[in-house]
Image 1 (cartoon, helix red, strand yellow):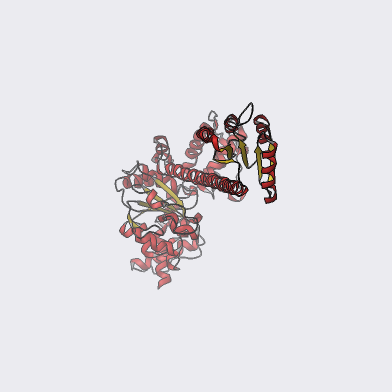
Image 2 (cartoon, rainbow, N blue to C red):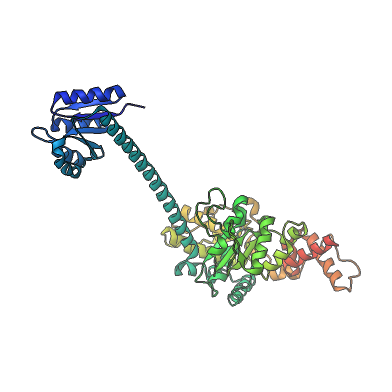
Length: 498
């Protein structure tokens, strides 16, 4: 540790020498000045840890020197001890007013000098350490405050949508004139009246499940309350319970403050659980409990809280198969599937493709600051000959890229980058859904010669024939039979149990 520096100031050489002889043997680095002006320059340059300052000096006396030292930010914090004769004690009041911390009387004793010097150097060290700790603490508090404010802003964004956002996610955002889309819109309108009913939305990825969930929320009496969306695939396993139900301060390492979970954030509104089929089994049990009694218990809390949350879940998984294999809880399925909405893949509603393409051209052009270009005939034909494995989401991406490449000119087929493996037949040759459902072609799996008169057995035979014709594609089989594919899944699950 470097030796501490002490500046001694006295116009008398004998006093200076005595102070130097007292301090240097104790390891202090001693600087000396015989005038106030010299003392100030030396203090500014050397920054001593302590100053011993004589009061009575010719010209600039000790009181004025002390006042000047305390006015200068560079020397303001250096403690000053006055040296004064016994008959000068009356001036000490002025000395303390000037900023001194203590005084020593002449003729001084070495032990007294060393004691005062040691005491005030120690006080100075502790003061600096305390200030450093306070600065560190203030920085940490500021960081935590900023983090809390950032979380609050994020929570606010989650909890509130503007009127414009509500309109954007309204029912008109689901574009289509096909009978299947009109049936979905009718279901959504029906669900607006029942704001407490849990809903399960099924369908392939990219078919607009979240859009339907938002349309259900923003058309209901919960529209003014939060819509919180959670992708169950992206929830970290070790933080899942905290994310959904919240935690208290100190509940685990890193829990620096109480934190609301998704259920509490969505209180009064809607919690959208996307990819519900990927929710961990232990969390499924806790979710079921909340659905049954509406109570949540944050991690680390001893008391449960009441919440009023509508659950809308979505999945592209075969939940019936997951139930049969034990991956998904059947009791949770029944709680979620109070009402089921199925979203069809885009290939099952080809008549909606021109409408959707025009819709995306319009909204994406506005976002990009372009006038909406037209879609050329060859572009529409290319879109209608495409099976859209990525569904509506893929179409949106295709149109966005086409707008960039066309640079405002009419969009041609060359601007659409379609995957060759997904190009099927020209739109003009596509069979109408009603005809396809009503007239299945002959297959290698004919009906038995004697069709069972038992209705369940007859249905099983028809389903087996449709599955054979479509190479096991449940969606296509359901389309051929004109039934909901969930019916086929349930039939298959019953067979496996048997």
